[in-house]
Image (cartoon, rainbow, N blue to C red; front, top):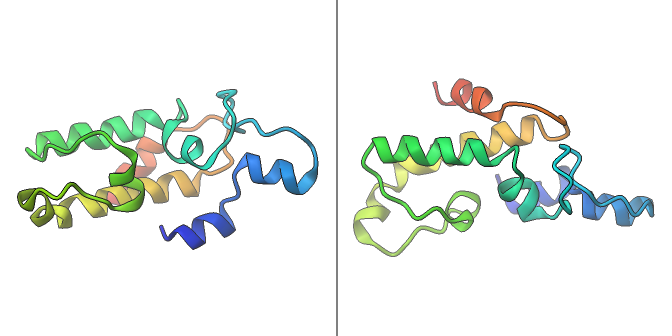
Length: 121
């Protein structure tokens, strides 16, 4: 997902609280954390199982990547030449995961893993 699209169409609880003046800036998925951009897309305890599943799948493909949000969210890969050549395999998986999270954006309790599997296959 493009950052511009993410910032415009998938408003995070912190920004919504500023717009509404409500002061409720907690994640609406029910984890109780402050709903920042990184928290909503990466750190939320309901999103973490999806990212761990993606990394386990990459490991099965013998693609060792550091578990770091900049890789999945921004496409910033390590400068390892071998890894840059395998980027074409990893990027579609990350995009499918981001689309699964975006599709179920305001759902309080959901399984983005099932949505990711649908997008991948």
